[in-house]
Image 1 (tube, rainbow, N blue to C red):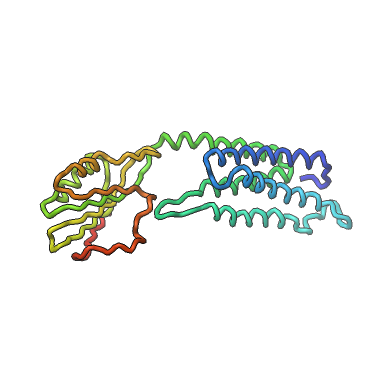
Image 2: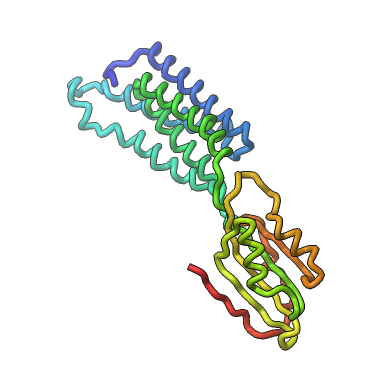
Length: 256
């Protein structure tokens, strides 16, 4: 970082900062994220301007040209970087078991560092960071779509006592490649009815919203009254005040 800074260098740094902030922000706006082009650009500019301000204050009257370190000017960009954590935390949302906004928060943090690079005069480093950031946001997204991932869901079954046995239900789920994580059973009306709540896990492509084949098989089974398939992240009606059926306590068996 040079001690003396003319306005040509300032204009170049700001121009590169604006370009980098808009490019990264375009990716967030394109995918409908809460931190779009304006937010990303403002974050990048704030970081860049703080470094430019620190650079301009280095050549302070009354100080030798090699003693600017005693001014501790780096607290200004460090404060910007620390404060960025509050904005990033505000973009992370959690609803039930679904967490969204983590990539947006990381993008804002990355954009802040990129702005510090441009504002500090490390134009090559800032440009390299921009290329890597674009490759991460655009390139890896297509790779993630082609990779299978583990997703969880809750299967709820209501049936009479002569309904399918647990072994029949487990066999149907195993045929579809689903693993049972937990199994809960409620006996109602003195054992005349059963309700099963099963946590399952399966490996599928991202965005695949089709339930496994055994869900439709259970729905067509005359011995099963109700079938509910609830993928992870979809809110339940746990907050409703509907009366719960009378019966024996639910017995949960955990599978390691």
